[in-house]
Length: 119
Image 1 (cartoon, rainbow, N blue to C red):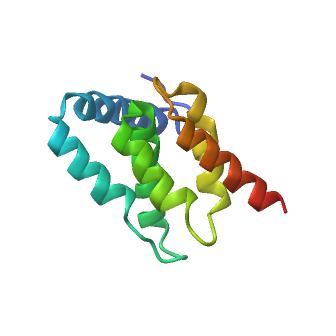
Image 2 (cartoon, rainbow, N blue to C red):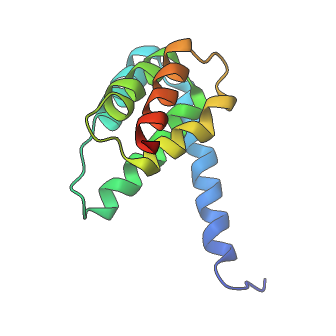
Image 3 (cartoon, rainbow, N blue to C red):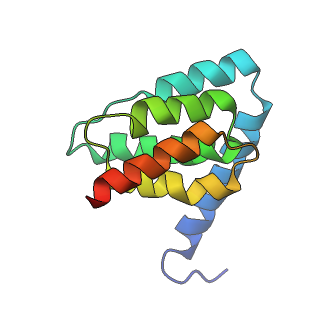
């Protein structure tokens, strides 16, 4: 097999992410809620790229599932904070159209957050 550049690395990441999605979807509700609460409430130091990357992966994973607890945690820890992170807000906006049952509350809060950032 001939590998050009980082194709193999990207393929491994994609496979890993797909496996995480499947595993997350099989979790019992209580386990899902506990994991979502733990990972989405994680606070990272500004220069801790490993922590930020982990939060981004879990943000993507949980938004892909879009359960109510996820939406509530996203609002609490990412949108209703004093200085929202623009990258996190963009990531959330990217996922909102893909949510199976988006709540009006997450759409409203994401929009409010974005308007605030534009001022």
